[in-house]
Amino acid sequence: MEHTPTGAGREIQLAPNELIVSKTDPSGHITYANRVFMRIAGYPEHLLLGKPHNIIRHPDMPRGAYRLMWQTLQSGREFFAVVKNATIDGNYYWVLANVTPDYDLRGKLQGYYSVRRPPSRAAIAAIEPIYAEMRKIEAAHGKAEAPDASRDWLLAQLQEKGCSYQDFILNLNADVLRAKGVNG
Image (cartoon, rainbow, N blue to C red; front, side):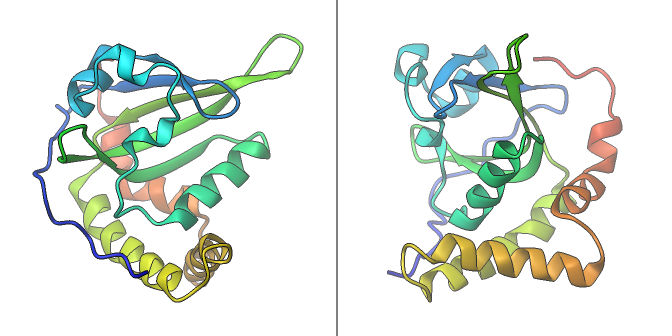
């Protein structure tokens, strides 16, 4: 089934100094959500805690982006991405996400820690057509193959440019990441 971007809803924007913070267990279920997260996404705490973090997944997000994220995290590395999330009432918001594996003192994975801030508008403009192409690729493949097919396409595009996904995302958001006075 081909995905058609919803276009419905309106964009909710974080203030430049706001941070969304959440923690999950190793399987991606939310164990902590800060007040900014609850306010922006529109969920009260009791509807977030214990739920899969993908409760806020927007249908415009290609599955291949999440495949890349999980592979990066499972290799023990942090992950950066520009992500479109859905609110409880059908609106959406863009974030520059940094997701980091969280280990205990013995090195055992406890879960994941995510800090999200507003991305640059240039980053959103650059990533939207990439995600649209990834969704087209996913629509042309079977459900099982779709995430790998779109992820592989993305990585091939970036390899042609001579950069990694992380470098691509960080370069698009260099000004945002240099900003001072960010609050969570």
